[in-house]
Image (tube, rainbow over all chains, first blue to last red; front, side, top):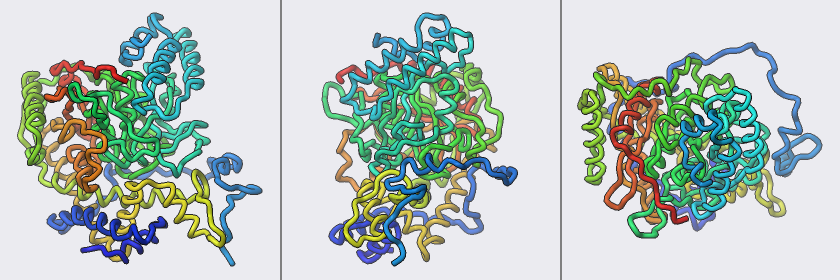
Amino acid sequence: MSIDTETARRVAKLARIQVEEDALPALAQEFNTILGFIEQLNEVDVDGIEPMTSVTPMRLKRREDVVTDGHQPDKVLANAPDAREGFFAVPKVVE
Amino acid sequence: MSELSKLTIAEARDKLRAGDVTAVELTEACLSEIEGAKALNAFVHNTPEIALDQAKAADARIKGGDAPDMCGIPLGIKDLFCTKGVPSQAASAILGGFKPEYESTVTQNLFDAGAVMLGKLNMDEFAMGSSNETSTYGDVVNPWRRGNEDTALTPGGSSGGSAAAVAADLCLAATGTDTGGSIRQPAAFVGITGVKPTYGRCSRWGIVAFASSLDQAGPMTKTVRDAAIMLQTMCGHDPKDSTSADLAVPDFEAALTGDIRGKKIGIPKEYRMDGMPDEIEKLWEQGREMMRDAGAEIVDISLPHTKYALPAYYVIAPAEASSNLARYDGVRFGHRAKLAQGDGITEMYEKTRAEGFGDEVKRRVMVGTYVLSAGFYDAYYNRARKVRALIKRDFEQVFDQGIDAILTPATPSAAFGLGEMSDADPVQMYLNDVFTVTVNLAGLPGVAVPAGLDKQGLPLGLQLIGKPWAEDEMLNFAYCLEQSTGFVEKPSKWW
């Protein structure tokens, strides 16, 4: 599998990271190096092996479905780059 | 005064209880060492006011006869831990200005026991790195130097600030986190002890997430006993982390008997790497001899899928990172890019993340995005998770054969120069974690113990890998090794 500039552009878009056009070929090259390293995994016989979901087998705990936290909008918004009237503010989303 | 910062936790605990020293004196000694050690760039956010308040409170508790082991012990805290009201940036520009409104469980446990926070420690950005060169705060410098050279060396990473601070006696101990070797590799590079506990032993709540199925917090200390004492306070069940284990925590310090007679120590043949320096091979051999002399049985074992641990890690960790780091979008916390006329929300995300993340973080987020994307999920991500299951099975089979712990080198080399790897491709840097990463993939406990110096005078470490939830026994093996090697060397002060 070889990654071209077009794939690098698509991955950057999916990851929501702006990458300048002239940086894409070098990025594609880096991906190829890393993916070339990862390709070794194809040597392993994984027939009949279940993909690991949890490294320590344990049943997830359950608790009563009740509110345990909340009512602190000021704290929630305290670190926001832009917060107004109890909301996070972002650029206009709908035209 | 500076002698006080050189104390171990155990020594300080005894002196505090005996009234020979106060927590305020200990804290002031450390603060003054930190002030004089700017050249190391280990501490990046100092919190002297918090430290002195905590120290005064600790002194009052000690006077009242209520002194847990960590009471009054001055610590450095890795920047990955969220600490209430104190910058917690994970060494990333994207979390610039972020001051959490809450405290991580691990730091809360330490503070509840009376520990003192001196400040936040430098690290690789989002814990992604093995040399502490990806930090927004700049490189950390290893207090050790090669012979008489003044080349600046890496302290390792990602817990490089923690490692340098403990080795340079700026604090008595520090917290670290370990996703692929980030406690054990830097501990080995600076000649201190570093423990990664069993996955689930320490709560991950309030620790900035890198790869959630691999991340574990642990202590970085001057001795194995200190690691036992500090881990005791850090760990325990936490309802706020659904993967935190609801299991009784053994008394780690009480387990340090030094008696390992009749125990079986496995030596995995796959850890004998091509091109491994002779000195590392020799150190490993010495470790085997020491444990044999102490009465353990040395058994050759095989962990056949070892070779595939790093490639599996470099699918799984970036995949989880791409998901975890999706939250840095410029909306709820941290940095938001300045927008141009007409920019919408997508431009805000893309510019914010381009400005806020460093190159290595971007690389891993994008690799993770790729391996999780439609059409590649099975070929990469699912295959890696299957290989991970096989790596874990390798260990289970060995432990089922009666092996009590596994002895390996901690790193494939001693500390290298800052910038020396800058022309190498990313994969070369990843090879630093070749001996440590299997442990994270299998969820096992591991400890790096300093074992000797190489011919350039740099520390080298050995690693012991324990059975799940058997940190007590693993630490006893480490204690035995520590007694046998008698490693007490310290870097000569140049900073």
